[in-house]
Amino acid sequence: MADRTTLIEARLPRGFEDRAPADIAAVDRMLATIRRVYERYGFDPIETPLLEYTETLGKFLPDTDRPNAGVFSLKDDDEQWMSLRYDLTAPLARYFAQHYDKLPKPFRSYRAGYVFRNEKPGPGRFRQFMQFDADTVGAAGPEADAEMCMMMADTMDALGLSGKYVVKVNNRKVLDGVLEAAGVADAGAKLTVLRAIDKLDKFGIDGVELLLGEGRKDESGDFTKGAGLSASQRGVVMDYIAGNPPVDNPGVQELAAMRGMFDAAGYDVGRIRIEPSVVRGLEYYTGPVFEIELTFQVPNEKGQPVVFGAVGGGGRYDGLVSRFRSEPVPATGFSIGVSRLTNALKLTGLLAAEPQAGPVVVLVLDRDPAAIADYQKLTAELRQAGIRAEMYLGSSGMNAQMKYADRRHAAAAVIVGSNERAEGRVTIKDLEAGAQQAKGIESREAYVAERPGQWTANRADLVAELGKIPAVARMRATG
Image (tube, rainbow, N blue to C red; front, side, top):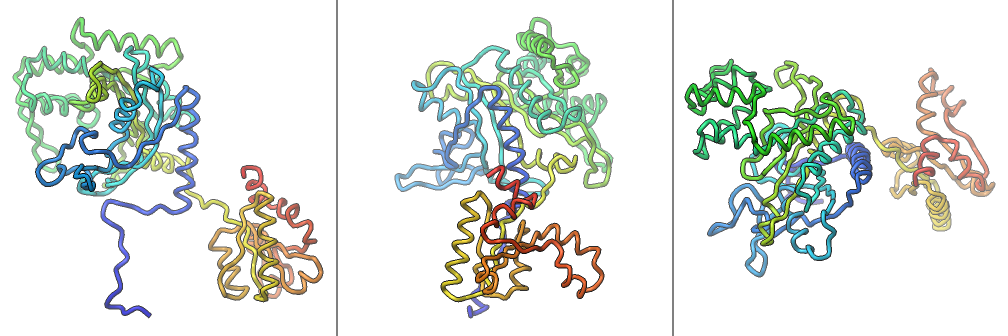
């Protein structure tokens, strides 16, 4: 036995999480639905590695010792810094540039996978999380952006969220025009103004106006410093929020064109709407921007009802691929936050984290080598028939083996003792049906006499007999 003073504490790193079989199965079902929508739109999957050269990621560049905080990095044996990807878009840009001559243009792809942020973790904020992206690279027109918004809406509908979401659309060119018209030139002031606009849903028009001016004090007394705009400057921004964007702005024209496409395709304002408060990535997006907001209410940490909020977003980013190639390469896309969307579906009852039906467990009641070989043969026959099956590999007795089968959420247990083997018979126990029937049995004597969910059959008929159990029938149908 190991010396307890040398034992290592089993602990999960901060900002990371383990996933149980039921959670994995739930997410897989959701991803399969999203994938079907993406493929219906003509998008194909690609996969890029978790690690990229740090300079490829662009946002975080190496300093004298290591890449800046924000990414997890290591130095290769050739003295090159590599980092775990922090999104799926920068690797796509590298992939497209590297395979430029072989790829069709426009290039339509989707990717699902984990991304990593070397940031302080907190409630609901992880250092490793999954995203599911779709992008069109090489298409410059607003029709490509409109298609992204329509695909986002169709994805939400396919997941059962019809009537519980809205895709909000804006344009960075419009926002830039507002800032120019208001005479806001300083980069820091621009950021503060845009953050104020982004708070429209949370604080309302009055709250935004305070943030554009000297600042805003919240209910707790905390003060947020504002942008310090003059009254005339605030008037320009507030006029925009009220629905009066700059005249002759190219972003306004692009939004009008997109609205026409939405209307023609049957996507009304209840599903996709132009929203002046949508603000995304200052240095990243160059045109239309959009996000999916779930509109149903959930309680916050104080028990107060709040709108669930955004589960994904994106926009046009025409400058990213051009970091690798001299010619301009337009691109547009969006990303779904898988963990956040999974949580939303669970809250609405649309995605239950139920354990997947476990395998059929073949109990081992005879330890003779010839009997063990026969158990293996029987188990192999079940697998060849498309049934998940395992032979018990421990050393415990029958009661412990049945407890094991219960913990495995087994669809059934197959019992073959020496007498059954000699007679060419097997005993089958439908564990779910047995548990349900047992609820009405009051005494152990009655339970033993009735053997709920249990019957005996010819061994040659085992596969057909197991097929009478719904969970096993589903296995064979899908496997």
